Image 1 (cartoon, helix red, strand yellow):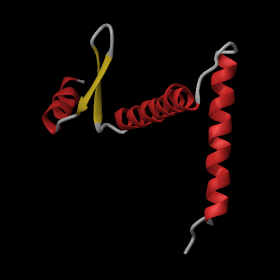
Image 2 (cartoon, rainbow, N blue to C red):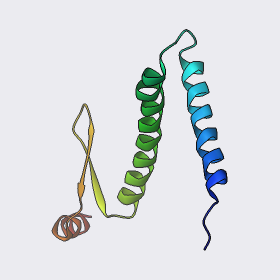
Image 3 (cartoon, rainbow, N blue to C red):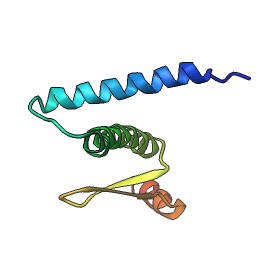
Length: 94
């Protein structure tokens, strides 16, 4: 099996947490909080931000390969599946 050992995985998790804490404090140098507050607000928010960045990259790739269609609705960009009929209509229009 190609699994990381428990101690190795634990160190990787600790590294990620240390980076998340230091990143948060870099952005908010006057911040202080309890263990629970750090877990909920600092770590969770950083994780969500990272996931949003990954999600944005994935959505961009899906638009580029033609699987999704990107719609500019003014305030926000919306995404939907590109149907075969929509795709063929666009191709016919060009």
